[in-house]
Image 1: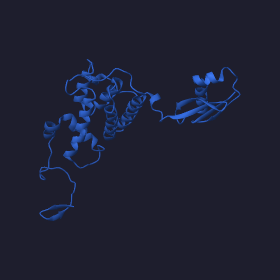
Image 2: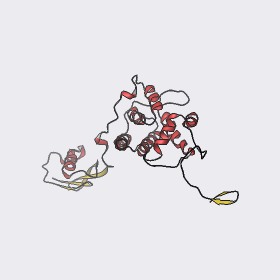
Image 3: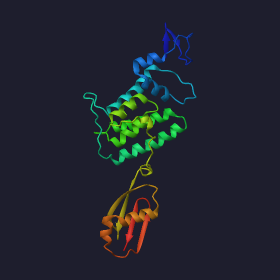
Image 4: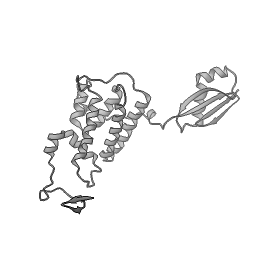
Length: 242
């Protein structure tokens, strides 16, 4: 309950206007938060064709996103680039390519607010890593460029690129990293567990059979004996009868 001079009042959302003396000018926002933060905040407030309440305090969330992105590339104390050229872990690659696929769809449908949410999710994942892989953060920088072009361009140059990212294509998702979370399939030979496979929940019986028969421990257990039957209970069990 809000009160003014002891009387109860209600909050109402309305338009900005000079007559209402509630205008927030872009110049003020640029000066305090920077143009990129202002852009990200406006585009993350909601669908562009809908009205929404202005809340200056919420701009801090957009600022923090960009600050974290900067720290994922540059050491704040030394100014040195901290990314690693080591290959990214599978979980990170899945997060990157899922974000690429989702952001592309959201941008194509003019939903920058949900696209930015996907970028924040990916950036938070990278923040949790000890070292941020180059192959993970460069796509993130490219996807951030439409909403925060100044910061993205600066990061792109610091990552060692001489040409502007404006000439770079939008990242493309690799389909192999877009499969659902994997499940463990137990492979038995004559009733004894001989191997385990990490497979997609939607894997077909044919593909699961082929993967099971190619598993090195299973091959050794079969030892050249003729396979009489393969019982498949996709995606969690394969029993090889020899």
